[in-house]
Image 1 (cartoon, chains in turn yellow, brown):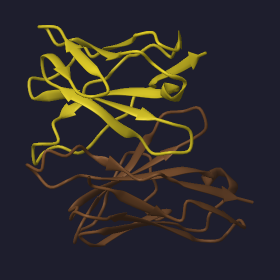
Image 2: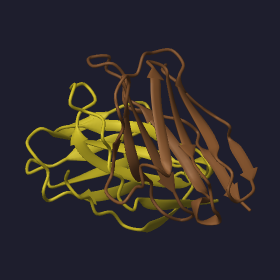
Image 3: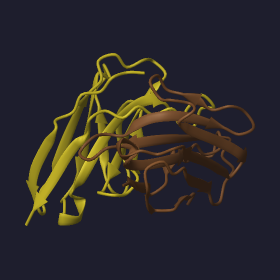
Image 4: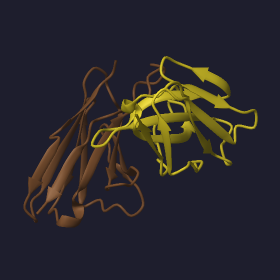
Length: 114
Length: 117
């Protein structure tokens, strides 16, 4: 499973756009990139998943360059409630019967200030 | 959407006690569930993969006899911490892999805080 590297922490202010970049130099051809959010004393919650280029949903966007060795999670107009730890994971997509085993890296602790 | 439920959410017990934690998939059948452990200010560490109807697969360094996993049905996996000691105090989280092709990501429970006195 590909190893991921993220910044340990980031600070932002309410209303700003936050971009968290993750490096995954050893990503395999079949690997997808998935981001989870975790609040204190709760389990991780799925945010977004992508394979290449750009994916957007109602809460975030995921940008993946052509070489797929990195990815950027973009959170538009963050609020105080977005303060959490964000994890980037690389592995086989949940659509595959081979998917499942998720290895968590250190994550990025995002702090949103008023 | 799919939901994974853990019980109990919080347990305190004396050293030497065995503690059982339940993980249930509420509206889907999960042939595979996963157990993680998380210490304060650290990331989740995968402990084992729980497979319905077969033995669990443990990650390197995780004691099989210490952390007993039983996946007796398609909606329930249990983790029993046997003869728990203070160093076993941690946040235990389970997840369930949704059925193949369901277009659902892996769902996590809200964890169980285990404190051993």
